Image (cartoon, rainbow, N blue to C red; front, top):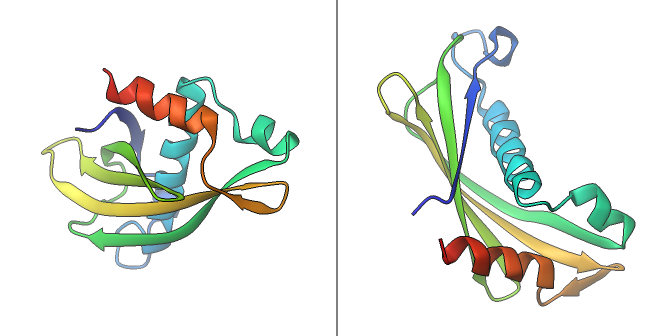
Length: 134
């Protein structure tokens, strides 16, 4: 089901006073995973932007399941699907030591071309077709 995985490690400064990863930091992990997924598939947000194409997050839903703590290694996973004009990234983060689910997220994105909402982007559609064919 997941088409991309990225291993990372919690850094001390990402944790709050309770000694767990601050809720806002998970969005950084999710975004970094999406960017690395794009790079792994030879797509660049910067290059698209220079062509007047911007992929932007329109909404995020996160369910926090189990906290990560300093030094925890974790695996960030994703798969993506098309839903109308949105590209929906389904993402999850699992603690590596016991494969326990830390968070589950749904990140809705849209594509804007030269300031106007686009129904789709051929580069993204090709990427979807390529990854689903695996």
